[in-house]
Length: 352
Image (tube, rainbow, N blue to C red):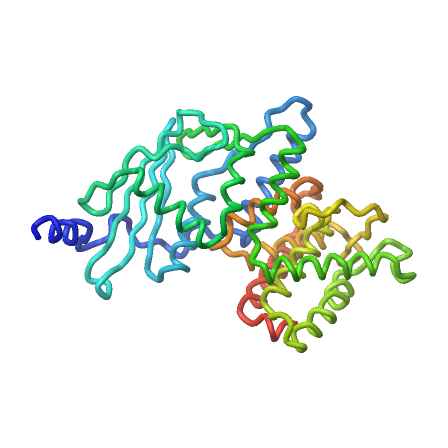
């Protein structure tokens, strides 16, 4: 009885271990801003033969993604990641008992131990004043990911070759092998919910049909035309009751975002790459504005809750991403795309 009472009381605390987030901090150009910096890193690597493929992830950018993700899953929750040399600390707070008490989780990771194909090693865990065996947290996290994503997520670490933590930033390295990346793309595609994956396959087939039409002979397509062409059959499927508006619209935006950067959804569907000439998507006769608009729309809808999945799928978006420099037109396209993504998430049926 004493052990039970202690296990119940020790995790609960009278206040959070983290301060309330300042809503004025961390405001960037929507989800495009950190993604744009990561894409620029990938572009630079391709220009340096022999460079170790990987990404530097800023602590501030990671916190701008992690904290809202937890808050969206549990209102009032807080989270913060601290990076130091060879170590990382993740703290998360959840309100309990109507906000009178708090559950404060503190996780510490060893980033110095290089274990290819595995996540950083959890060395200590504490819930309030109650220490927890790290193996328990690992097992609980794996069960939660199995329930949410299915067993396919376990294939994702196979491409990771190492981690490096420094004050304020995290380096993630991965394998150079292209076959490894094709496998990763297929795994990321399997993480999609079945209705969204089926919708992506339908949009992919519709896109191939468009390529064979005389209207696509000039190989240039305005984004509004592309949106309407794919939305019409999607709306027909929704009205027929064979699918729902949300997965259809999600898959539509992903399809166009991929094609905006010259990629195909085929690897995500474990299908061979099609060979027809690519169709150039443009806004105001500019393909870079189409890229900004569509990538921002898709990333905005993914939201921070699904960012891990978005980042896995985003490898296909990153490969062919070009750069046009900073401009007010690009900023406007980013904001317009983010607005579309948010409105689509709020009312998918109305947007279709």
